[in-house]
Image 1 (tube, rainbow, N blue to C red):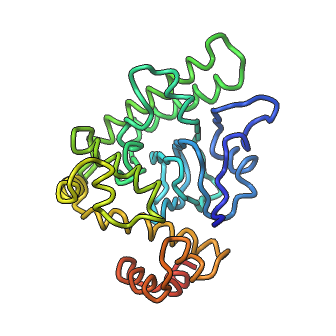
Image 2 (tube, rainbow, N blue to C red):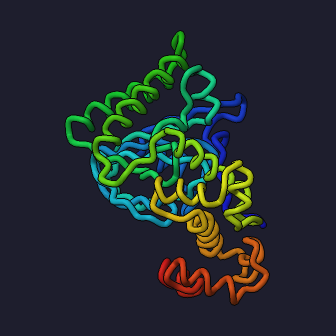
Image 3 (cartoon, one colour):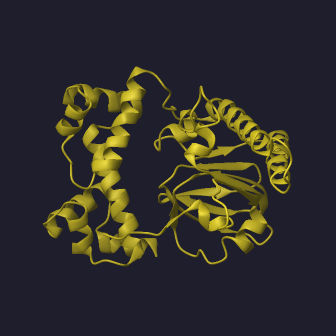
Length: 291
């Protein structure tokens, strides 16, 4: 089933040359690159944005976050988002492919940073005035460097991006009030479980099958998910199923029964009952509330 258009980084750069990186001020980005994007959408790249002035809201996978000076957002590929921002909004944005970062750093990967490591971790970081100035300077250096063809241009941009990710990680770990999923034996398996869900959630709902793919018992998989995020493995699978259901519902491209079938449910009535149990509303009620 065709779903939301997934924006490719090529749409934001010259078609004459393959590029894996984009940067801009947020005010210019909205006018030149974002002017025709009016609906929630997804990307196939990693996105980081800093707001330095103005306000509004930023909705990511149906969770709404306030935008104000000193807020940073980190989006994984595939996450759906949209924003409504004041006319005086200011800040910076950059995004890049996974290979743009990973091929440069032999001992690190972009999804090792906590805000990219798991979609269960918050995509937002709020910083104070002094820290905002620090990040603004780093973002501005990236933006300025990208305007010219200096020697080692890409290396400098990547080093500045890495510095932003490092400083953000320190503050992210320090500032988060909820537990962050770190990297250890449990979280490595948890991450693999998330990746398997992303691949198979439409066709496989059984925690036992995921446990088999991970070469562990269903009981141990449940122990890991409870330890990491306080949820059962079934909860994790159905969360992803109904996140996709919400995405497809607001696209208004398909009937309720078509959406249910696409997600592996031949009986729409059964799908609707589970949706209401997990989401607190029937599909039609959800659409009304969202609108």
